[in-house]
Amino acid sequence: MPPNVEVRRSPRRRRTVSAYREGDKVVVMVPSRLSKAEEEQWIATILERLAERERRRRPTDADLQTRARELSRRYLAGRADPVSVRWVANQRARWGSCTPDDGTIRLSTRLRGMPGWVVDYVLVHELAHLLIPGHGSDFWELVGNYPKADRARGYLEGVAAAAHLPLEADAPGEVADIHHGDGLHPSEEFPHEAAG
Image (tube, rainbow, N blue to C red; front, side):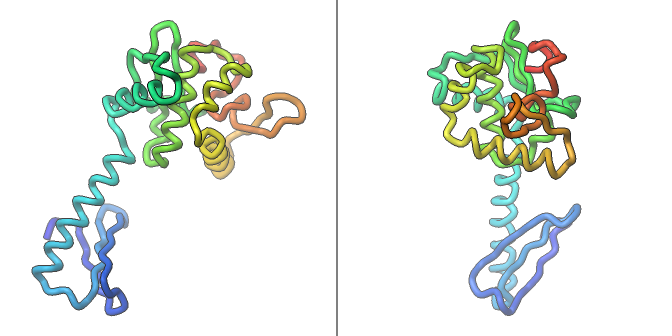
């Protein structure tokens, strides 16, 4: 058995095997009726599945670049073509940013581990900025091509609220959102190049 794996046998568990992280170890839950050989086989299988799930939830810069191009093709008719897409650790007040002049997109490492459809929304948002710098109706129309845009914005608003990040409204009477109404940027005082 690999190190840092704890097997928990359960008489109540009949057919399913599951695994989760608990600190620095992996806990594997198995039915108590399994033989030692079956247990070892299931542990290998479930650890592979867990590793794959974690890889999907923590894409590399190359994965982000590939995903951004696919999202541009699917939702923006391939018009946004980023030169680079990468994770950055220095964005504490925004989820993503871009520089339209050089075609770069940066995503906060705080997005790692969030559902893929949320990361996709931030990518679509930044890809749309490569085409339209501001947050006018034409911009939001492009972002709205992504079918989970509203859901993802709500998710990010919830994360921001739970973390006690400041919320502010787009305009009087509009629903508050983090960082000038799009959930991605801190304020209008920064030029678009820096704020995305």
